Length: 471
Length: 110
Image 1: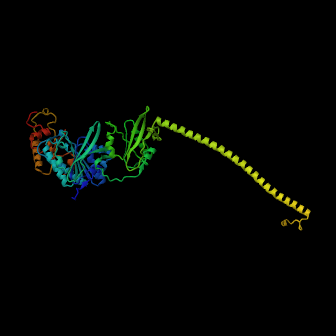
Image 2 (image 1 turned 180 degrees about the vertical axis):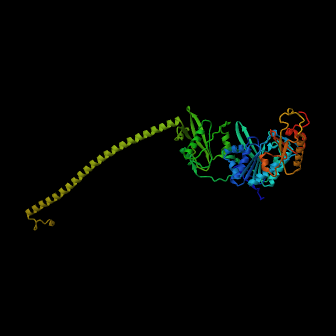
């Protein structure tokens, strides 16, 4: 044996986790519990997993039911015992023990059990054995002292053969110190698992506890377990290894504006808590998220658990540490109406809106409406509608004012343009006048010249006529 | 075969009925030997000439033992007359042997 104990996986997820790999290999484990606690199923799961997944054939010796009954009981869980027997991976030995037809008369032993087991083990090369339920053997032969010592011998015998075995024991209804009715097995076995089935306030919960595990550390708490269509599942709540990668992938809540408030949706694999008092719309918000997940083609599970709590925030505070995102819903009552508000109380690892938002439940689910902030904070309901109307009026007034101003300016522009045209005309007229004056000025000079020449000629004042330069 | 009592003195099984017994033993362990001896003696005494005993060694034929639903040894099974009775032990207590197999002792009035 190495530094750590060799283990045989049971194939039961959760159980293998809390035992650090399964049951002690080559040793005997006692599984005790009251009637209906799921002992037989645990044993069968162990055998079927061994045969299917670990290439370890097994032997079931049952004193409880006929082989047919055992097979049909677990068929609904997907265990085909007949097929495993045909493949030589399993032997089912069923014994019907009827104390009324047995009388004890002197010394005896349980050697036939050993012989039958040895033969079955050899036949399939079994590595796993389940005995269900040992209590039946007690009482059947009238002498518990012999049965007790024979069972202890059987445990040693199985140990010697290196068989990983599960002894199933009925839990005594005497309660108290002893795990099984006859209280012998716990000290000869190396590992003891107790199954429990409690009904509290009409709610049934199955729980599993590893009472002892020689030579190995193990989870010691009570762990809830389920018996479902896929067999036996233990939920190792407190042994969950914190080794999963945090995803940065966002998942839409199905409420676009809420996604925006959360910085794009919730992180895949994170936990979102919606809290609020009765009638705040928690279930509707949840249902909306589930509905949108289904619409995207994802599978969603919605389970509705109703609990009668003591106060509003007592439960929510104590689970806050476990959730990544916390949405709080609140009803506010003002001006004769109740309105729904929503805000993000916390959201790990992402920026998120700090705003209190109003939401409404519509025919198409949950909708966040526009934010209107008034003197007393966020406006909701009729106050919001009033504010919306006031803002609409204001917008209208501004629009009209602008239109009026635009009209005025248009008019002014037209006037000024007309003015420009008139001025331009005047300018043109004046320029023409200037030109005309210029022209007239030339003629005038020439006339004067001509007059002067005429006069000079007339007076013979100069030798060379028409020579102006000499003047 | 001597018939010390009239037939109508027997309740249940007929007095001349054949008894079919089977004893399951482990090898030739002392307990097994004692059981066989005790059974033979009782049969000779009370069922003279109208019994047969089959001896099965469960170590040699464990599948037979499984099929016959035998968990303890030695075990005597009364196959006939019905109903089936099982008697577990070395049969050292002869009273219990007779009661367990419902053998009415001969020489004793009904």
